[in-house]
Image (cartoon, rainbow, N blue to C red; front, side):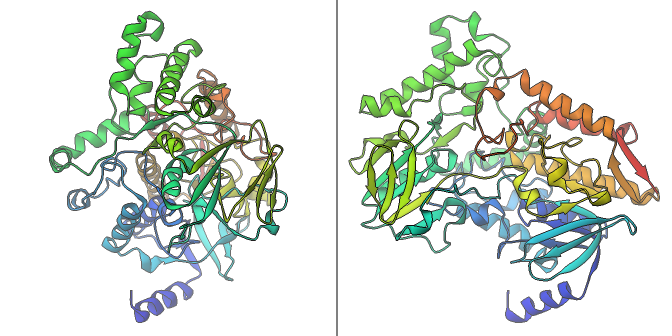
Length: 545
């Protein structure tokens, strides 16, 4: 964009203070929401903290960053023309390709003119008199909107643990989700990485190749499967493009928003050991298929343990040092109850001479020192520290906006004991506020683009309905919200998910309530419920005019 164009955009943004809708975030959710609002002739402004579009794929530029859903499915479906014209280079796309795709979406639909970059929302309050939302930013903007829509993402509020002595470290330190766009030269450097979740598992093989020596500080080992990533097969791509509508519909009706093999109708307990091993081997390398090999993997501890031990044995076969292999073999929680990772040579990395695994569950980190890090057992000299410590998931991005609803009630106070929503889209006391992939929806348990599009379409249809019928406000009823929260918890408790101390429960954030936040009931079932609510005249919502 030229300087003249940028000045024109800035002038257009500054000159307006009242909008039909304000959207927070310019990732895939915010961009698609803006496109649909414009399509209906509604005025909108998007506030984005970053200097570019892409959300997750703008911020997460760490080495090895890659999507863990197939590229052909981790994409937007609303434009059949865009589906056909865009070409993915790999089966699982790297960060650079995804950011490029996000920019293509913004350019193709001329979205940037309604997006204000480099701007963080620091306050959003509902005015009881005007029935409008008042939004303030860190750049001094003060605007009002009838509808307030959050598209800030579930994993955007970074979590940097408050380690003692971190301010004394004389080297460089980075959080993976704020990795410099220009990269970091690790040549000849002694690097330490804290965290072995999905991000760490992607970054560690690349960091090991780039650095002189890599120390991996692991508290909890994770289940990870090989991605078997390849360059995009032109024949496969062509087949998908010819039958995209069928593939998209299958994803929308699925459990996780991705077209996967049908779940088996057989219990793992009814199979012989040979049959189980054959089924697991056949699904190896496809995490969704592995959990679908039998119908009770996610609900029966004994069935789950069969799969878990199969994966642990794969780790033992890969890692040459038996002691290191056992440290890397996850135990104490069921497979699938934390985010299953897919990797490119993760476990093989521990066979390198320049990689050391440090067990900080047995010997916790005591402090960051000027020259590195000290555990209860030893000290480590480091030039660079990398925090792959994740996020204050789902609720964190919302709390950081300072959202206040009716009668001065803050969202953080309302959710003091855990998030309470109706359908994961809205919450009592906050009229005309919509959350895209909020707590209580499938969100992080699904292919995000599938869930994003379903939520955006539901929201725009609702706004259109209100306008058509001369209605001003929509807000959930307390009884409906209570019933939905109860249902979300009930379904989660039918599974093994609550048995792990995961970020799904907020367990990675000290003091955060332990509540299972996403909806486990499946993308297809959830979509049906949302459609039923509309068909029953917005059952569970109070609509006023």
